Image (cartoon, rainbow, N blue to C red; front, side, top):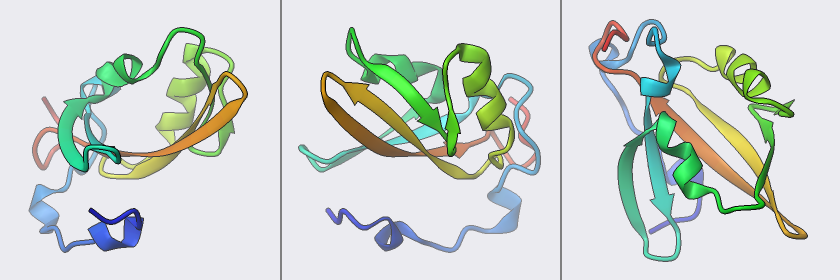
Length: 111
């Protein structure tokens, strides 16, 4: 499994791309690439917290600082329904960056 994001580029027919965000952004789909086990999972964005450990600090999303849940949702407002964005998490003394890919439910973006 490649570590380069560009290796996962592919053509996606326009009719399969959400045209507007879901009413509840937390219902958006999220692709999880587990580097160690080299597996891919399809989850929902509301499950993001299951990938964090006690003491982790989510400090940035989509290039914007995050100090509250409201900051996180504001950062995501600028991300297209089928877009990707980076998150930065501080775990102990280590800063980790992950790319999160969103996807809506169907072409209209409605659940």
